[in-house]
Image (cartoon, rainbow, N blue to C red):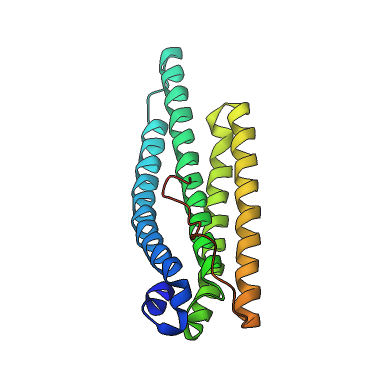
Length: 185
């Protein structure tokens, strides 16, 4: 929204490329977050189904344990994807701070707060599912990844809030905006 409110305004013409990229990123992320919500519901369904598998014989127990571990891994990976998408969002928001319509700058502050809260909530879901995966290496790698992502999200969100609250303008990004792609590249 802030990018859209800034596009085409002569006062912000030097940031036009950023506004276009940020608007496109916002649109792409909106679709990505909806997809993540669907994937999360499916992951929960798979885990619930695994919990209901028979456990009368050792073979049943082995199948059930295997299904639960696979479902738990998916139930951890989906919210991990959400944390990564939150990083993409907060990076786009931070890029706009001081480079967009000042009348909408408080919306950047709110966006940074909401992105950080969403990331923390998704991270909690990652961490609660990791022990059920049954893979200590994956547990360590995923925990480290969550911690790394949350630190970067917190840094960018704080930078956004600082810029918004100061009211300062910033120079254009050079040479082009570095807005992460859907694949995190």
